[in-house]
Length: 153
Image (cartoon, rainbow, N blue to C red; front, side):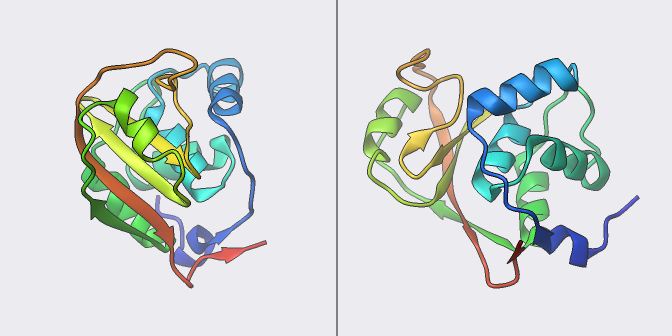
């Protein structure tokens, strides 16, 4: 079942943090392993439940299962967002947070089997330096920017 493009690009703005997304995912959806859903929710400023629903319908994400980066990038493209590869000098999540601390916009940081999101210089993930610093090695970094096709209300 596919969602029409008009509904994918017309998005109600709902800003959420990692803590709020984790609470909704665990308590209301009985889900785990939802790092890609949290990243999409934070980067696109949509509700966790809406991001989870879109991923389930469009790329067949199952409860407790992950997604592939290529699927997520294609979905973001359909939603009207641009994903561009960015090169950073940091090798781990711990040092990347310091490097991206004063940036604007949203970044996806891919490690093996995990994706973290840095939004406006703050990491929105369990691996945040003040929660649980992680030395996971970064495989790739993408900047997520909305195009003029995204309609906010």
